[in-house]
Image (cartoon, rainbow, N blue to C red; front, top):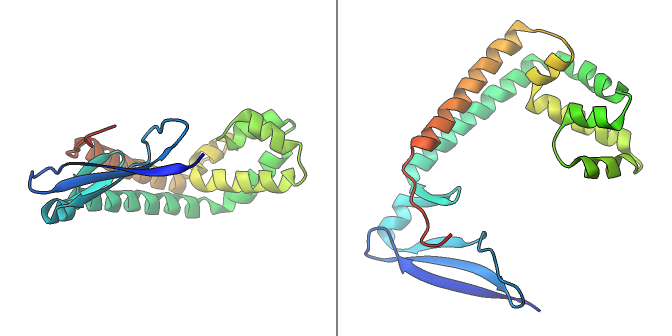
Length: 183
């Protein structure tokens, strides 16, 4: 039982060169082909297109999209910094919740059964603190809502971050995307 490298060649978008897809195939079961590595054997297309998010997009669009995402991430960091005085109270709130289910609801993410298994292992309090800190840094406004706290600066910066997120999503939606020759 082993993996074999598979490769398939397709015409590139301009028709002058080749688009090459490479993936690993297991010898006893078929691959889903989710992890195909794409590259061009075409100078024109190689400089014009990049594979991103299951599509080929123009390099200039990909760069603009990445810049919009960085603006959104910077705005999210601003929200977290504005609300950092509430991080300690948020962690204490989560650690003080009476049930594992309530703690999972507060920090969210992942499977409840996995979370439950982790709760039975040693070091759960430290893991809960890390999860609470991560949740606060990702969604400080949501955490403040659970603490029943309002902060005008956090709210203002949160609106800015959400607007940047919507701008990035709108740009991605409007961006011309070319499907790979196989899915």
